[in-house]
Length: 127
Image (cartoon, rainbow, N blue to C red; front, side, top):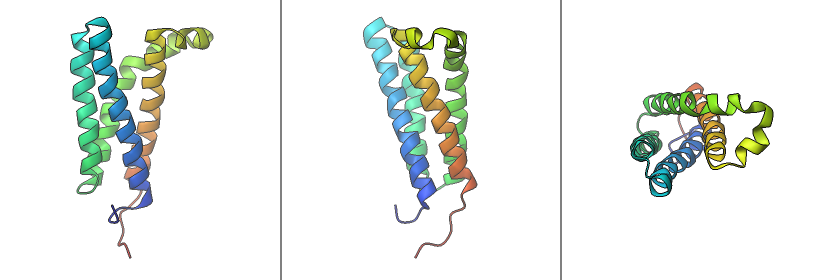
């Protein structure tokens, strides 16, 4: 990836980790609870995020924009649960659903910030 600025590489790594977390979480939700909704949402969102990572080499603006949208959609699902339990966050995070919500919220926030950083960084000539 010599073609890309360091900011794009950093953003791609963060998006990739969140994509794998999302993909694995969806599969885990299905295996542990039989949740087809978790499986479908996790696999779709995870694969889209991983495709965004691959796309950063060809079209970083589109890839980072889609990653922001996917992460925001996941934040809409998970962040309200974290906010609802903000006063007992430690106890909430010790539960299965709490751990999932905290990980997905934290990862989503990091992904949004990293992708926005990538969007704000122009790709210039490399030497």
